[in-house]
Image 1 (cartoon, helix red, strand yellow):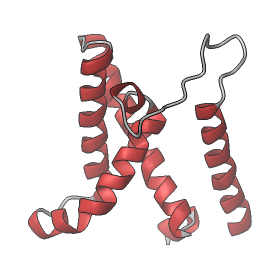
Image 2: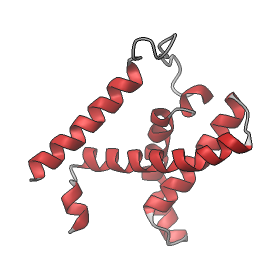
Image 3: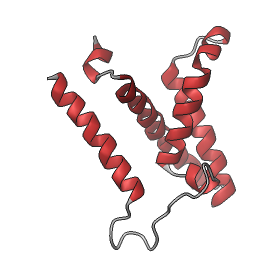
Image 4: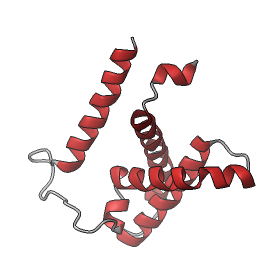
Length: 130
């Protein structure tokens, strides 16, 4: 069963990476290839924001645990929403509609960052439930 779960996680990561890099024919006019490490346009994407959230959470969660006891998942969500709000404000402009949508997208980013870390660390979904 663990083999199937790990294969599913690897498949999801692979598909996310492929869809991030490759544009589906007819769905996009251009393929966005970042030429700088981080830009506001890149941070406004789910993949770009997930990378930043993953890095920042892993570098700061031990320090945060010493100051305030907050679950890492909630910390990742708050950070994801902040990064996406800033990226949206600096790219397309912040409106009530895309501000509310950022709350949902922040959840997707936090889940993506969390599961990516779990996959890199070799944790499986079954280990989290035990």
